[in-house]
Structures are given as structure tokens and as C-alpha cells.
Amino acid sequence: MENFTNLSDRLRLFIEYKGISINKFSASVDASNSYFNKIFEG
Image 1 (cartoon, rainbow, N blue to C red):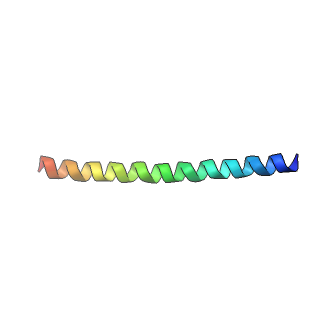
Image 2 (cartoon, rainbow, N blue to C red):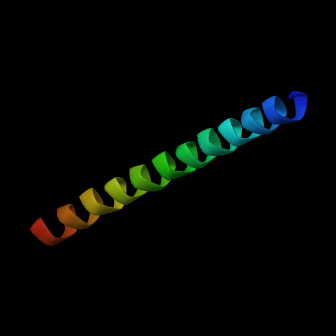
Image 3 (cartoon, rainbow, N blue to C red):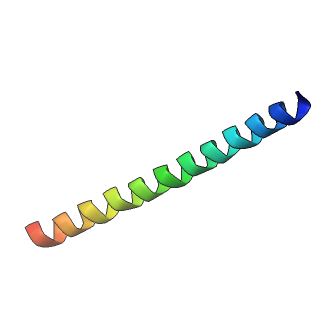
């Protein structure tokens, strides 16, 4: 049972890490989109 708990904790940390990297990626995409919008509109 100890191994299962340890595994679920690792899985949760891994998912949280992936979520953070996905958030950073989408934030950079939003930033580049607004940057290109300013260029093409201006």
C-alpha cells in the first residue's frame, strides 16, 4: 500500500508539473499572438 501511495503522489506531482509547463506555453502563445496582432494591425 505504501508503494501505491508513493506512486500516486509522484503521478500527481508529474501532472502538476505538466500543467505548469502547459500554462507557460499557452501564456507565451498568447503573448506572441498579441505581438503579431499589433504588427499586422499597425
